[in-house]
Length: 485
Image (cartoon, rainbow, N blue to C red; front, top):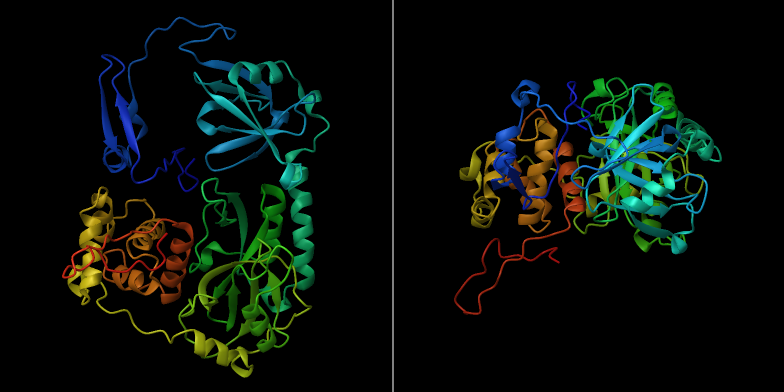
């Protein structure tokens, strides 16, 4: 479901190499389309574009199946929560009590009274049950056919789910713990500022990462790190999270109050031990407020600065430094009772930041396209990407087309592709992006650096140039396998 749309649209997200098979129901003929071809055919279409004459059909009793599809209605008491593309349900009392399952949104139909939900299962559909309440090492997964699944849930009423808490109660209680930590530990200056948004999370099944979604409580759409109109007060954000769901709140660094943050990823191991780098930065940061990240394996150290204008990413990749146009998901899980917002400018940590992070310089070749790239390796990246299997998408984005229908999302789409073609080289990604048609002067360098860092985290694959065995030949592409896998 496209949460940014006001007219009940759906967003289809597929990999670049995904192929659609489009079939004519009347004559059975089919044709294969690339993701980009389907995008060109369907993007921004209206409801009237899909109108067709109704056909008379023989009504099929609910107990019968059509074309291998099977149907069952379950009590809405089975519903747990909704995600962007699927909903989560629980199994009733009995053999599989404690298990949950996911059903794609397109296979669900809720009745008007919201008392039941009708599930449509296509031929061969397998329902996967997960026991999320078990310890991680004992977590169980069971796969069952549509027939077996229907036998377990058919005819069950709300009473069969009574041993479980209602979703709204679960959400409130889960957030209540987080809210208490935030109120008690986050510096008062931050709590009083209207720089807050709601955080929702979802695990990416493909890479195992916990993806964060920042929500604007005014619109229920995505918040923007450089748009104060999408932020709100701590109180309003907390109220929204309790009523509509949220795992925690995030603070928007705006660059106006001097508040900044050192972000250390993967610096706490499974035993709670911190890395040497984390220990060094903590020792240099005095009593500055420090908390663990949502994952429990990272640290956020907050302080203030009046003049540090550094690149967000460090030269050795061990730390990130944010001053504006960036969200920090807060937890209040304070580390070593550090609670002040002391000035980094007056602490030893300033020296650490200056030695590990380069000073920010202006982007060169802004908006000039490929002609703005002086390095042939940069130009080779563009040429290689535009001539690849899905080069039409890359070329369209590079030329400034807003393919996502949302400029920030299109920025992210191009940066994800650059993460692949540039082998995770942040400097090269930023150089190339600055020459693209998507680049906007109104966005700060912090915004683009944060986008590049997220793209590298989210894009695990890397372009692997093939070196020639001939001594005189140069490698294809940008000649670097930095970050390759």
